[in-house]
Length: 153
Ligand code: HEC
Image: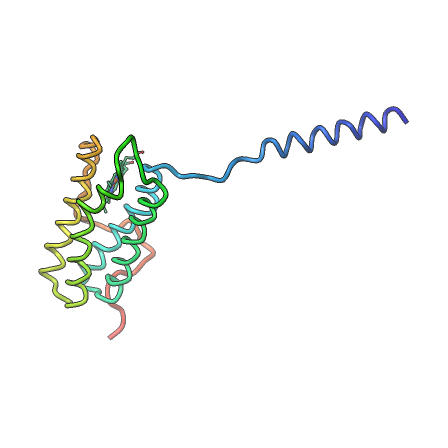
């Protein structure tokens, strides 16, 4: 009888310990979001534009825009810096230029706006005192399992 009680007490203690150890919801930091959602989408948009794949570029432009909005929403302030304000003064305009170029299917305008966007990524890195983080126009794909060229007529 006594041993049953001991087992029961131990079982209750073990289960409450398990509850106490439930990790809090994962909250990715700025560096995580940049690497997880911003960097791959910047790359995919670049590859789409280089392939003049305007339908996919249109999709990729909106996805990148949403990723940057998610960063702004989840991390409004980073080391006392106003992230929304920095987004507005760096990437916002080149993203709009890219959207226009894609709609117009204008390759030269896309290339110019994409270079501007990439420079804007770096402008924010400099403003946040991270000049060592240098983004460039992609010279290769990190996604060997995805087709970026137009495959339909
Ligand atoms: C509003 C400012 C801002 C903009 C705009 C911005 N970044 Fe960042 N980025 C940061 C900050 C701040 C960090 C450092 C975060 C940390 O260390 O926690 C960072 C880090 C990174 C990193 C991580 C570096 C590494 O090697 O781990 C990458 C990659 C990156 N950014 C890519 C981009 C790309 C691509 C763009 C443009 C599409 C961009 N960023 C636009 C602020 C910005």
